[in-house]
Image (tube, rainbow, N blue to C red; front, side):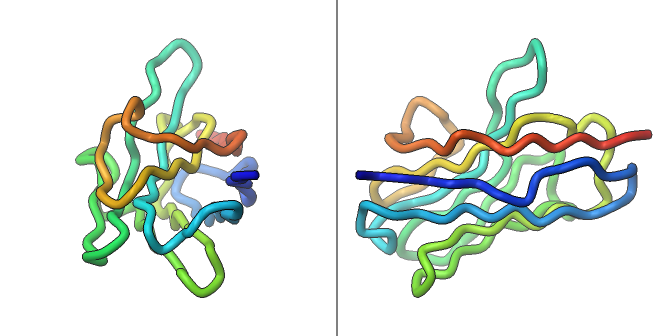
Length: 123
């Protein structure tokens, strides 16, 4: 059974930091691209950051560049999203997702999803 389990969400003040983790199981992790998406109330799901299985190159949405960093540990089957300099507009549910091989910023491309971790940034 495929599972993606996020942890690390919570409440933080503006300017603070949070680290989200995603533990993956049930598939060959190092063959899959991984990504973080987020969805704020009343808004569409949007890509935060993603990376493919093979090239180690990370990608980040423009509004989060320089503040958010995605990384993966293939030995531990874990994905990390480090979020710094958080803003109230970063408040959302954050989802970990996986798809075979190449990453993309499009939610429809992803096969596996976690249940989400809520992040609230207070002003």
